[in-house]
Image 1: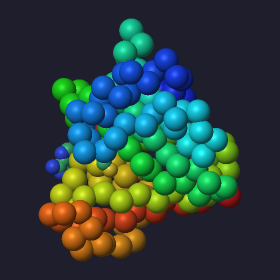
Image 2: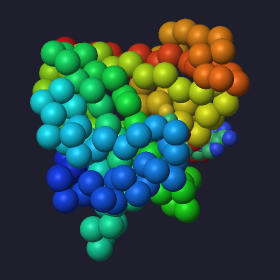
Image 3: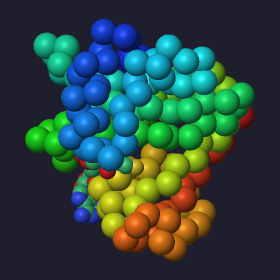
Image 4: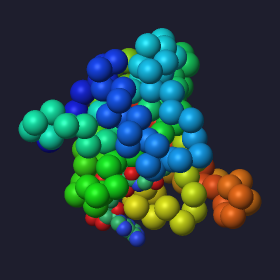
Length: 144
Ligand SMILES: CC(C)(COP(=O)(O)OP(=O)(O)OC[C@H]1O[C@@H](n2cnc3c(N)ncnc32)[C@H](O)[C@@H]1OP(=O)(O)O)[C@@H](O)C(=O)NCCC(=O)NCCS
């Protein structure tokens, strides 16, 4: 398993995973990979199949996680952790100092990874999602 910055040729695979995980959210990886305000990373297996992706919006030294997903049938195998850790190291190289995200309160799998990677729970937005609260997490680069 290895991670790297996404390329335009990854778009079909990313879009396929995205559509399954987030059927209500329009895929936009093609534009995001090309945009100077986004960073997109993927994790691949030894045959270069894309297993997961993460999309950040990055403006100046602040970022926000837009989408983060691992192929449904491969979840729970630490792919998400590898991808998130890799992407944080890449963003640190670009001197990103602060990353925020919002996640459903019940999404314990994602929350566990965020917390393991140093994100701090800084607040709750009741009824942010149709049926439940959103938890706001913030990561700050402590090495700067
Ligand atoms: C969230 C997601 C990206 C995580 O990737 P993943 O590869 O499945 O996750 P990992 O295997 O790296 O890690 C999952 C962690 O959650 C833990 N976990 C699993 N179920 C859990 C639960 N019910 N409660 C608490 N922790 C749980 C696992 O034990 C593991 O932690 P550990 O390594 O310390 O044991 C992936 O599950 C996914 O795509 N989910 C659907 C889309 C989504 O929710 N995206 C995030 C939106 S913000």
